[in-house]
Image 1 (cartoon, rainbow, N blue to C red):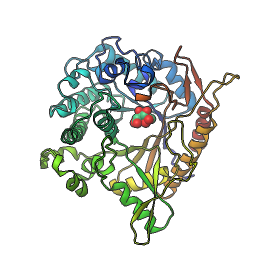
Image 2 (image 1 turned 135 degrees about the vertical axis):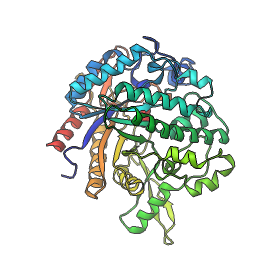
Image 3 (image 1 turned 30 degrees about the horizontal axis):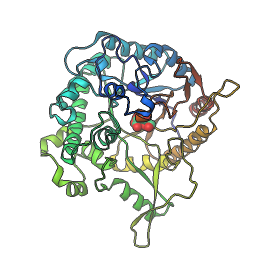
Image 4 (image 1 turned 30 degrees about the vertical axis):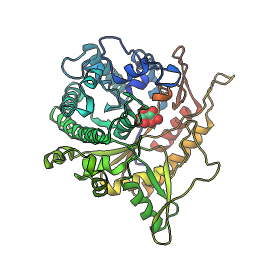
Length: 451
Ligand code: GCO
């Protein structure tokens, strides 16, 4: 068996997507609260006001995690629940909520992985300009320091950012996500730079305040490329395409190396520096040092990939998907190969232990007449993807863990509750949870692979 005994088999969620209790117990507002309350941004006016009501039902959810057999759970902290204004005073009830959740996880043998930021930016800081304000680096570092002070006595694993590509790209370029802006490229690149600096400052703050040795990582996304065959030429073409900086496209910041090279290699990619030069802020050596903090692991959210082959001159070509190629309910292509090649290309370039921090699918799940939720498509998806991940480990790739997205059906951002990603079904009228067939399948997979 290729997976090591101590392989991390987990599931993931994020605060805004599951917690609810949007205005309870002293929580401050965040940009998603405000965005959703303006009825026309999100599918059918859905909001995260109640979501899965995890804030009140977290014990039930941890029980379900335990029954599932996961040994780790990745969740994020709702910044404005902890610090209502983003900076300054802590909210005691918010502090207590995460503390209780952590205790409950540990009591059930589940290792907590905390993501500091999964998109729910405090509205008070947004009003000051958010990531466009250069002080945002300090604000984030202060928040990271608090988290470390409060929880690092019990929590050993921290992730600074989840998918910066998405909260910048969808939040400030296409405007589909909160705060719904379409800003100028110059502003985009200033925000990118500030987010990267904030990452570095947070790593320092987490470590400086840690009560025990901790592990710190980063969880961006990007388009994974995989080769059409195992030929050296196809592999090289896929690798090159994956790490090349794409030309700017209104609406997307889907770029692998722009967001990861500075963090791990200490420099922005040359092709990007050339292509984006008219829009870049001043980038100093000191900035690059701050961004380039030693990390304990690198992670990526991988849902699908793009097949690439080399033509007779060795140039990369996108391979068109076959007519009728499989896709998920959210219309994303099913490409299990991404879990073999993504980890391999990422570890070759960044040379750090690797985690899949998200992978999964949305399906048209319903409660059948027998009261159960049968989701054969998700089982097939997981089976195919995890088999490819196993190949990565057989190839010698240092993959340390896999977090399924998601533990539970939840608020899928601008799509509201129209897409169901969970292993556990939620009736959003009354909060009832029903483990789906895939929940039992994953439970069995974990058992089989930890024997
Ligand atoms: C993501 C997000 C998740 C999404 C999931 C499905 O990082 O994109 O982390 O919040 O719900 O990816 O779109």
